[in-house]
Image (cartoon, rainbow, N blue to C red; front, side, top):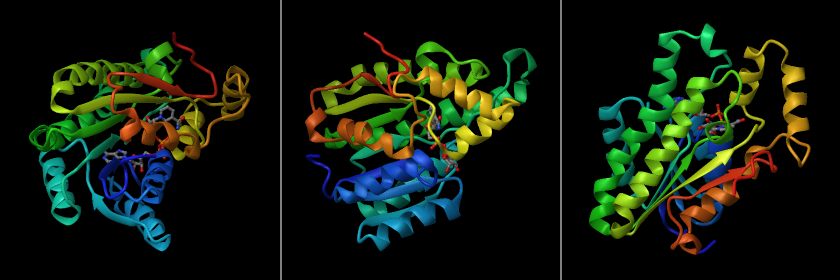
Length: 255
Ligand SMILES: NC(=O)c1ccc[n+]([C@@H]2O[C@H](COP(=O)([O-])OP(=O)(O)OC[C@H]3O[C@@H](n4cnc5c(N)ncnc54)[C@H](O)[C@@H]3O)[C@@H](O)[C@H]2O)c1
């Protein structure tokens, strides 16, 4: 894809399933990847895999819910790799629980990771992007934001909030040469999906129900996501902002 070579890219949750696949794909395109994750070992594993394939990556331990920590981690990434050209807000967390059974403590954790974390990251990179009049931001939401999903009420609220936030920032910063777009995965085989299924009580049944609901008849893989994410980050998407794209085998079709 055009325009990604030598770009400095931050991917949050880069130690996880979708984040790891996205980091590796950016590196294949010649980008310099800052792998952000609260799990230092996972971030380092992704960076090491990229280095082993002759790519450029550095790992940064960062809890996206901590505003001061995010500012420090972004500054460290810029000092090592250069000004950030692309931000992918991918870190996320979920737990399967009917809303009536959930607790305020759980809501706080869900909101902190899935919504406030992305706000912190935007806050850290936007001043530089505005000054340089260039930037690409891709936010990873979920099909749950678009159509709802049983057992994920607060998570869906956060992800829908992220969609509204992204559209607003797309408007506020179009004149600064910054685009903000959203990718919505459907059920995708990662650690997060596995723990979500376990929380539902009968994981096999839930997975089968998802599989039946997806027109393509299969659960996604992490490698299904980077194509759409890198497209929004590339020069090929220069005239596209404020858009939401589902990557979910046809599960969600929005006109
Ligand atoms: N897997 C799915 O079925 C699915 C469906 C829809 C949306 N998503 C979204 O895709 C994104 C990636 O999820 P995944 O499925 O690859 O999950 P994953 O669990 O494999 O990866 C998530 C990563 O985020 C990191 N993380 C969690 N909290 C953090 C924090 N406070 N600060 C920094 N990093 C943190 C974790 O350590 C982990 O490495 C998430 O935003 C998720 O909500 C996933």
